[in-house]
Image 1 (cartoon, rainbow, N blue to C red):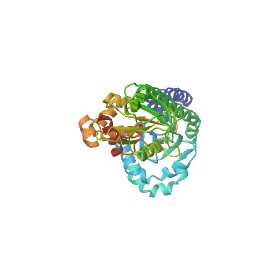
Image 2 (cartoon, one colour):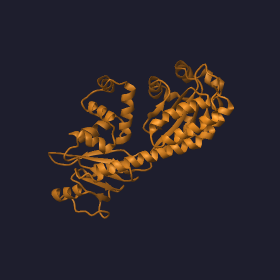
Image 3 (tube, rainbow, N blue to C red):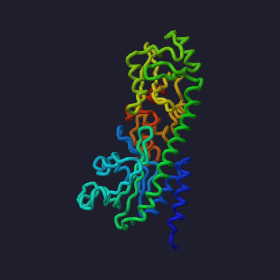
Image 4 (tube, rainbow, N blue to C red):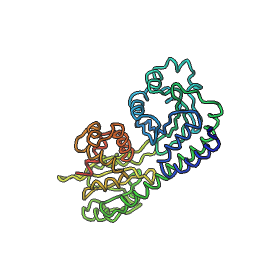
Length: 357
């Protein structure tokens, strides 16, 4: 029985709408989209070029293929430079931009695409949120027919809906994170928290922060009128605040310690809800694993990887211990880097060890 493209088109629109609220619907949306447009494979990718992380919400091919692309072949992908320069919503087709002759002689296609049953690529940038560019990529199988012009036209019709869905999904996720963060961090009543601007001016302080200052006599201050001063290296604290509040580049989490024989960690974390602001946290008493999960909105599976890393395991050993693939562990690691505003495993471990000391 023939499939009615218009009915499938409506089904995809409905599934895309559901995906704005729940990311698990992206995969069925991609499956229907592939069928509609004459492609056999699809992936929704988030790419932060500055940090060289590439993550995926859903993909319709083997995880090993994705891992090989991220770790090896991304660096020589001829589409990467073109796609990053295209405006949001413009369709990219490799045959149109590269040509059949280039593709036939390309090391990238001959060593990566074709051995993995991937042939032609169609992709579109859906937007950039929090430094991560979102791309939807569709691929044909080696022996599959090249999509018809009418199929590309149907895909083009869906691009505005896909852009809107991607942006709404990101905003809803950001809102959820902000609500969780507000309850878990700013008003937790467990440890001192200050919200500061780029120059370190205090924007907010919870009750524990006020009590901390009274007990330590480290500063006299007032919200909105004074710059935060703690018993630590002032230059290091200022540098940490500057990198956590910067807006011209991706902000980064920082760490310094109080002075004295019993040094305590001072976490400097970019605020998820206020651009150009940072949260200063002194985890005293030290945070538990569950508090770490709340602080950074870390999922249980991601926290399990973090705890094993602290124990000295490598990513490969984590995968073996947890009974999951190395791809899954790397996906969790990418999520941890993004949520803790760190760039690599060393920076991540500094933050985690400071919290769990």
